[in-house]
Image (cartoon, rainbow, N blue to C red; front, side, top):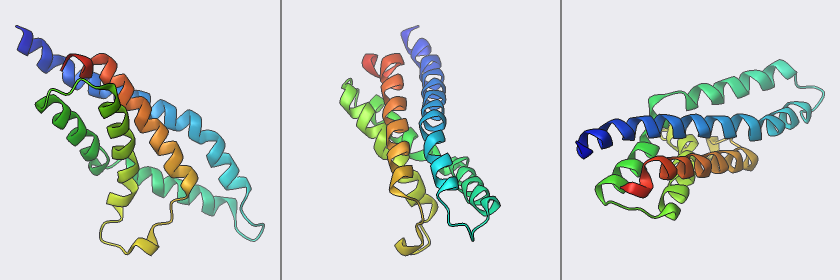
Length: 140
C-alpha cells in the first residue's frame, strides 16, 4: 500500500513543484522582462523584444525543459536522498541547464540569454526543488 501511495505522490509533487517554479519565474521575471523591453535602444522596436521573449518562452515549453528536473527527481528517489540541499541545488542547476540544452547544436557564442535570465531561472529552480522536497523528497 505504501508503494502505491508513493507512486501516486511523486507525479503530483512534481507537477506542484513545476507550478511553483513557473509562479516564481513569472513573478520574479516580470520586472526583469519589463526592464529588458524598456531598456532597448530607440531604434529597435518593442515588438522585436516581445518576439524574442516569446521565442525564449516557447523553448522552455518543450519536453527537454522537463528532462533535467526529471533526472534530478529520479536520481534522488533511486538513491533515497532526503537532503533538502540536493533538491534545492538540483532544481536550480536543472533549470539553468535548459537554455544550454536548447542550444546544444549551436556554438556557445549563439547563446543570447542574459545573466538576469539565468538568475531568475536559478531562483525558480531553487523554489521548485524546495517544494518537491517538502512534498515528496523528505520521505524518499
